[in-house]
Amino acid sequence: MVHPLLFLEFFRKLLAPLHLPAASVDAISYTWLILLLLLVVSLMATSALKSIPTGMQNFMESVIGGIEVMIVDTMGEEGRSFFPLIATLAIFVLVSNLIGLIPGFFPPTANINTTAACAVIVFISTHVVGIKHHGLGYIKHFLGPIAWLAPVMFFIEVIGHLSRPVSLTLRLFGNMNGHELVLMIFFGLAPFLVPLPMMLMGVLVSFIQAFVFMLLAMIYIQGSLEHAH
Image (cartoon, rainbow, N blue to C red; front, side, top):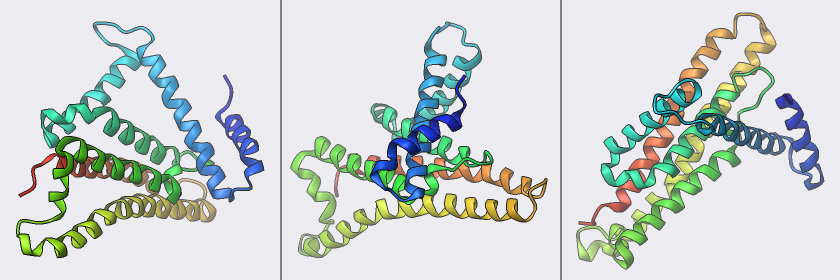
């Protein structure tokens, strides 16, 4: 089996002609590595499906089932149609967070370009869903309940909606980048045993940040489906 670090070195050489900053090259390289790992895991889980799941199939069905339950509880039955988008984002963000806990590996979510890309996907999806569901009537979401205040409410709502991808980007980036820096400092000062509590905390932070990102994505999309009042 080819070692993951060989994949990373391959991607770094592949991106070298673009003269990108080192942090961006690492983020892109680790992103592709995570995509390959998720693809392999998916193939392993679905290569021989059984009526009574075992092994990898059992694990992945538990993960997918848990995410599906959260989506239905938050968005209702109509949320099932958005399961592929939300589940993909949740799993990608979680694995990206966790991979940074492996010594020598870099979490793509500690790079603002990665978190911004995920946030923009949520932002665009929210308004595409809203327009598709309500048509031109979707503009009512930005006008408020009082007609004569509509021009003022429009600008307030636009600013509020534009702040969503910014907050999604900075929240995930800030938490993961901050944890990565703290972990690097601890490894530099005391490489044995002392960083372990921070690594355990990192597991908790990774799950919480993935859950928050998924929850906000569900809330934003659900909001675009509701009728304006």
